[in-house]
Length: 260
Image 1 (cartoon, rainbow, N blue to C red):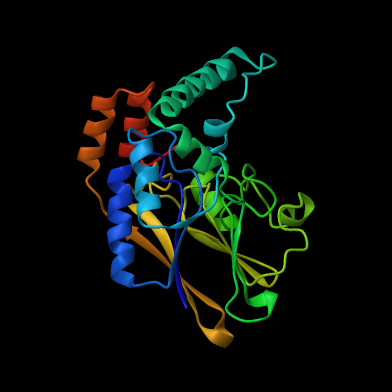
Image 2: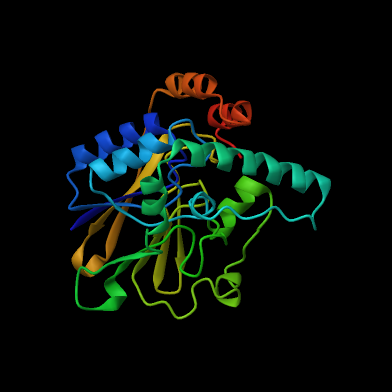
């Protein structure tokens, strides 16, 4: 059994097409999209159309929620936070206008998780979520040593994975997720935590689109391959400039730098 999982497309149809082409070459039994499909890119509607055309199983992410139910801005925040929230609200409004009511309804009806069971034993399952098994917001960071390399500090010690109830009493062999746009694998007790990274807006310094390929290996559990796929970045930058979504220059810089 082979499963391809990708996440965080963020309206980047150019990268999505490259990822889907690579996935087809691997001939998986199942393809799953793990959330954040439309927001912060120039072709949100086209990305939905592409996922639907391929009949890909999908779950929702934190950046899909505001496209269904736009939250009001909070005024109990700093001026800098308010301006950032206002910029995001402008992008949300722009993106919603690109989508049909049917497309917004499709996003609204996506499930939170997907579980794949290669055997009758839950301990063998592959559990797919956007950010973590608890919600679509809180991060599961890379292993402690990789956190030091990326951030200069440990943002999430191993003990925190239990203390903040992100994993709790979950029973499965592997958790696959995106949200933090950095490919990595982290062991937690008997469970492997695999960040499949992102199709767009990378945060690891590598501009390529990324996804995870999971192969059930019987007694050896799930074998994980992080795949890196080059795409036409110049084409995507040109589309951002052409479509002129709010704050598009910022997201052009993020695509080019591959950092948050």
